[in-house]
Image (cartoon, rainbow, N blue to C red; front, top):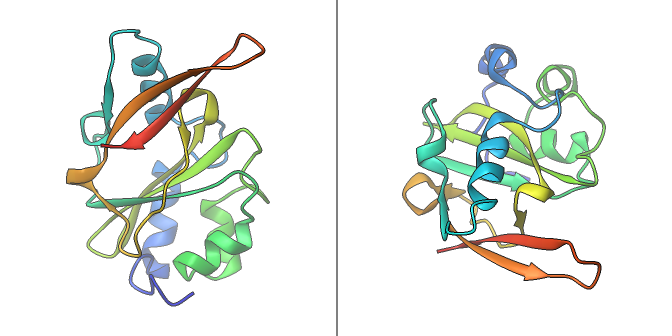
Length: 153
């Protein structure tokens, strides 16, 4: 996929390892989202308010997406990408979040489905930071577990 040739220069991939949470389970942003959605009065989540690093756009990958697919998308060689994305597939109960700024990948982490399900189209250029505000939609399921969806505002 030639869409994001500019997203991840290989020279910056190694630097990203320090801020990447891709191999360590649910990330801190996802945990903050989870805290917000569990507040019954919360109506929306603004990703920009939950981050401390620089970013201008983000992408997400669905559960089951392989490391190879993500590496191809960010145009990183397998040996470099393997240091950033430390699992073979996005776990079945998570999404992979990738944040970028000025053509560089600045942060990656896993987002737990329990902290809000994502199911919307992401434009080629990603979702801009100014539009990364999501409405919280709660849905009761037959097994008594509520499902929470994050939908673009």
